[in-house]
Length: 410
Image (cartoon, rainbow, N blue to C red):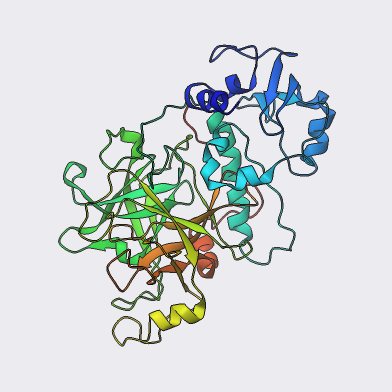
């Protein structure tokens, strides 16, 4: 079964992974056709949503049905209808597992409302759900291809579809790439404030989206110019505080299965193990990564963080600021972000919006050569800046899914 799922996910349109009878790409699925739900490993029938009582019950628990076919004019056309409900049988652990990111190409994203009343970050949460809906539509219209990888800490193709590689230079053909970032909307990339400028090269001028390899052949739609650079007002270098910025793209970002915004952490999810990603150096005296790297990191206590980064007049006159900074580090093995990873995300796979990453932090700085055991890195705490981000990125968004325009590639 595992082999079949992987092959299906790698080489077929999503609907063909669901329909046992094997319709060809682009051929509509017929009512009553057999289908298979890989979330609960159970066969079903493709019927209109209005006729599927089990799907209606599941939706009351915010568990969405598997689609046999979706189009742009109706939210649901045909769903894979089961004889029993899904909400009480979904194995959420599989969807939470970063190592099983491939499941997100086979299973629809599922979300649950937070149990606690949301007092801050409401806009960010609503837009997170909106982008998840767009992700669902985008992946229905995509035939997945796969690049060969060597394992280790190489990320998988489209595993982190919010990743951005930032370039510096007047002409893209001569640009140099020194920082990372995270797509958080159809207009903005989140990064570190110190990444807005590179000595000798000038201000950041390009963001490349939807890539795995640093040197892969690019399409024009992968390349975005930077229209506006907005650093947090209290960022005052050489001090390391408030190292966060927003980059406005020169045009609206087109979403597809490899380009989808991440959600923002608003302080309401468990944040134990996280992953940092970037194309930075592979270690001290090593080369820049050619393939996007992912590294597991663990939170370091505030006491330890404070002891590792004692007050320093020029950069940290007040020591680490717990409200706006945090330390993540190794588990006894040489794990760390390095030069060139700055601005990239520290993230978790969301437990509330499945198959979507939540950005906890922005890679900021360290005090030693990267990869030294026992010396964590410092990350800007995203939850501290949610009101500022919301006011710039979504100033007019008031209600859930207020903006109904959906942009995705066929």
